Image (cartoon, rainbow, N blue to C red):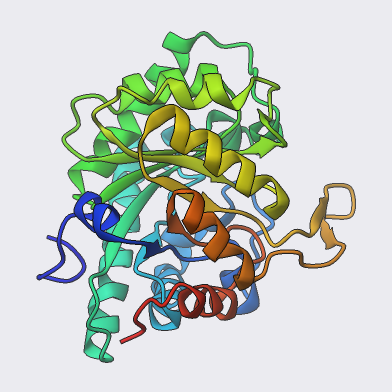
Length: 311
């Protein structure tokens, strides 16, 4: 069941026009006063403060987003196990991440939001579980088969929770993309595949033409694109993704500020503005939102720039 009982499938909506994604979940939780300095990041709140996650999703729906991305990016069986959380409880928390977004969609409808609302179940890269920054480097020293065996169990749990789409996001290299494409096969839930990039290459240095081509013939993949990247890298990537795959393109960059890992703080200024999104749409972007440091105000501005309905 979708977030809105009359909502069409997301793939059909992308064929008809542009859909607005939410923004950064972590920055919205931090702005509400929650401490995320933990290896589990926002996934820790699935166990400790699930209502806070629902409130964060709701803020984005009310701001103009039509898709909420769940708090499961850093939620893995291995990561939970390091905190003493067993397999059964970890599976419950993964499924709960979808349920919390559904709850937010119901509350948004009760508040008068009438447009279709969808839930995207996030599956972050292997490096997100390591919590050591390797998600922005890739090349973990694992084979594609080993990576597929890592991803498949939690994707099965997320798919069983019946999200509208699986978000295979912040993928740093083509090895992991191949593993995810294998892991998502046969689950019965569509997915999008989104790389984190540096200029015209993945974070691991592979050309985007090669990276996007992996998904061109994957029936499960309804959109390809980029996220957690600099805004200025988006437009060229959109053109490459649309040309190579012929699929709708998903984009949700960071604000443009830089993360200082030593100081654990953001530096610089925001370079992502709503005026950029219409150009991305013209190049083929159909799912557009924000990632780190892009909050409800920014998503509301994107929705207005794209002419999306708030109510």
